[in-house]
Each structure stands twice: as structure tokens, then as C-alpha cells.
Image 1 (cartoon, rainbow, N blue to C red):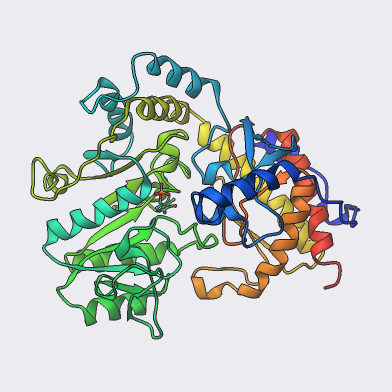
Image 2: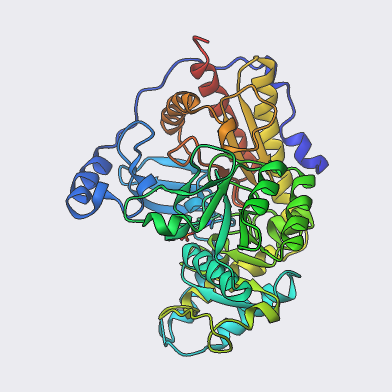
Length: 457
Ligand SMILES: *Cc1c(COP(=O)(O)O)cnc(C)c1O
């Protein structure tokens, strides 16, 4: 922890008197009108389900503008944003460096469907600074990257089964829209209509952080497992930190069974550090997938591996994968500009230190007040959990009833100008654009809402 950062949150949060009154709801009239209109165009009024605010109060906010750590909605309300477009905006909204590079590149046209030097440039930034990939392929989303990584693993190993973990999200590709059935090691049950049970049967679902389950799965499907896929640090269903020992075990058991280990780093890649969760755990996944931060807010995904494994990809090899807009020059430009900033010396140290102190100062307050509330955090990712458990490491550790408390918190925070993703299962992100002043302001608001949530405990 940097000394200067330590000072920034000095004071004993436990003694801090806070205002425990609810605030009146902010006006969402324009958002509500836009939402009514949107419902006539889109299922649920949205183009991605969680945006519909089904798990929290009120209509979704229609965002008009973002700048730094702030967003403004259609009614002119201003918020300090901790959603950051679900992770990509590690530099905050609309950073000048990214905007300038993108607008410069756009002057020459927006898509060619032919190679450009920009693809080389972004690839070089990644490959030079990441020991996990020798060759890569750009896609247009995280889902595509994961879908392709799975196909590559199957093509490379000549095996079909995939092991995935309950509580990890990997985008909406068919074979990963599966959840655990009952029992320790189970064939997936589809978690979406439209996914054939026969697809789901190729995916084995087990709990996180459980060596026994992993051993049993490899035993039960001996010689059939192409790959194990895990989020580098699971961050789509709460923040489920895995033990170092477990990650080491996972690598070993994959190796012993000639199965590939896929780290889905669509959230954690370039977030925890330039090498993501693989760097954090000093792990050596066989295939990695990235997205979100990689595109600087534009649609980009990527998968990568050793030159040997990537040699299976078409046109070099027999695993087909393509994309009309893959490597799109405008998106590459955003990636180049954003990743270049992340490589500045001290970038992660400062960001992560700031986020850590933010998270821990909130925790000190909750602990002093004896609230059943934990701020789990790693790097600049945090998750508010209404629990008294010291660790939450698998999906079953989360009490669904605790989400009622999050709902209250979310509403109170919106009314205080703080925007969190609209679900208690979602993590929050601190960006480089969150200054001490705004973090202090946000912290105050969070402490107030905790007092409200726990008023009748
Ligand atoms: C967001 C996410 C995806 C899906 O990426 P999209 O760009 O939304 O398709 C896949 N895996 C993980 C770990 C993610 O967080």
C-alpha cells in the first residue's frame, strides 16, 4: 500500500456518525419513457438481459454520457460509476488517449476485411508483455473468443468433454450455458431454452475450489476431457477467490490427463495486472481468452496460446474460425491506446492500491458496526456480499436471500449518485479515473446505505 493512499482514507470509519435516513428517489422520468419505447423494440427493452434492472428497483437508467468516473442519465442525474461498462473501462469513460486514437484511425475508414498494420501493433503489445501467448486471434466479443477456444481445445486434443465450474460465466455459447445438476460431478443441465441436452451432455459441471470433485470428474471421464475452463478469478457470480493451492492442483491434474487448461480472462485480463489472473497465480494456462479491457470499450475479444496449439487454427490448421469484423481497425486502435496506458510503470500499483484502500475502509466500517457484510476484493475488482462468512469460494456459498439487502443498497446508492451494476451477483470496478475525492464521496454514500440496510437487523 502506498503511504499517500493510506493517508487518503485516514480516520476511523467505525466511529463515523452517518446519516441513516433514506433519500427520496431521483427522477427517472426520461429513462422510464425511453424504456417504454425500448420495450416495443427489444425483448425486455434491452439488448442484454441484466440491463433490464430485473433484480433491483425501478426502471433502467438510459445513459447519455460518460466522462472519467462519471455517467449521466437521460434525466441529467450524475453518478460515480463502478460498473464501467461491465469492466472494459479501466481508464474510466471516454479517456482522451483512446478517443483521440480512435478518431484519428476512423478518418481512414472503418472496416476493410483485409489485414491492417493496427492488428500487428496490438498483437505485438500483447505478445511482448504476456508470457502465456505466442500467437493470438482477435474476435469481436468475449463469447466468440471462448467459443473458439473450446473448439480449439477439442480440435487439438481430439477429445470432446469440457469441464466447467458452477458459478463461472463464459459468455452465451451453447455448450457453456449449462449448470450443475444434483451431485458432485454432473453432466450439465442446460440453463437456457434452445440448448439441446445433447450439447450440454458434453459439458461436465463441478463446484469451484474442490479438489475432490476435480479428481472425481477426471476419473469418471477418463481419457475424454479436452479441457477444463475456469475464469482466471471467477467474477461473474460474486467474486469467488480460489486458493493458490487449488489452482496449482488444477494445473497438475490437467497435465496428468492431457487436458488443456483454459483461463477465461475476459474480465481479469489486463485488469489484475497486464497478465491477468495467470500472472496473479503465476499459472500457465494452455489457452487464454481476453475481451472487455482489450477493446477499450469497443467490441473486441481474443484467444491465444502457444504457437503449436494455435497452429491448429484455420488457415494453418483444421479448426475453423473466422469473423467479418475480426481485427476491426477502429477497435484495434482503441485497444492499442488503452493497453499502452496500462503498460506505464506503476499503473497497476496505483490503481490496485487505491481500490484496496477503498474496499478495506468500507470493510472496517462494517466490521466495527458488526454488520454481516463483506467487501471481497482483488486488484481493482470488488464485490459487496451480505454475509458473515470470511471466504466465499464457490457458488453454493452465496445465500440468495442476501440479494434482498443488495436491492435496498442499490436503490439508496442511486439516490446518492452512485451507480453499481444492477445485480448483487455482479462485481464492481475501480478505474484509474476514480480520484481520491470521488472515492471518498462514494465511500460515505456506501456507509450511509449500510446503516439503512442494517437499520432493523
Ligand atoms: C463478459 C465475459 C464473457 C463474455 O464476453 P462478451 O463480450 O460479453 O461476449 C466471457 N467470459 C467472461 C469471464 C466474461 O466476464
